[in-house]
Length: 168
Image (cartoon, rainbow, N blue to C red; front, side):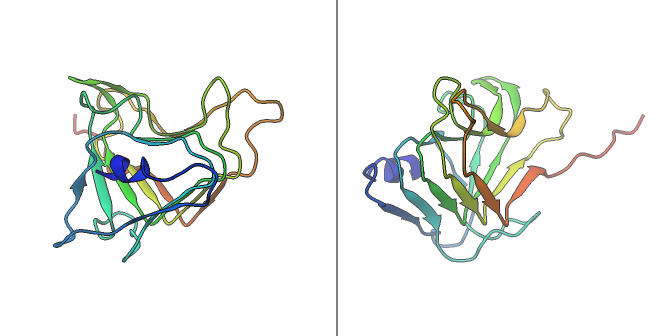
């Protein structure tokens, strides 16, 4: 799984986790929530970069299940680089729990992800925004003095893939 690969990197050593698409380029199941809690690591998808509103590139799909926490991606390490990946998921409440943010950066207690850099990443809520409530797409949280510093988002697409008014 993606998380098993991330668990192999060492903190504060500039380790890289390179994620290659598998044969056929189909969307992969996320399995468990992605937790990046090591400092100065790089998690990069290789190959075609994800394009907005399409399924090309290296995509992972996660839904509320017993395997996910309250988010699909959680970054609490400092100096983390995340790039070249697409995460698709549902928000709100389902049988396995409640997704309260598709991506969370920081923690309420420490807010440690200074210098987080996310590029060429797409995070999409794949259900209608009104269904089961709508969680934050990205939630940045932390209570350190001066806030979380140095966060960058370059060439990212974050949002709901489809929300059309229902016919009455």
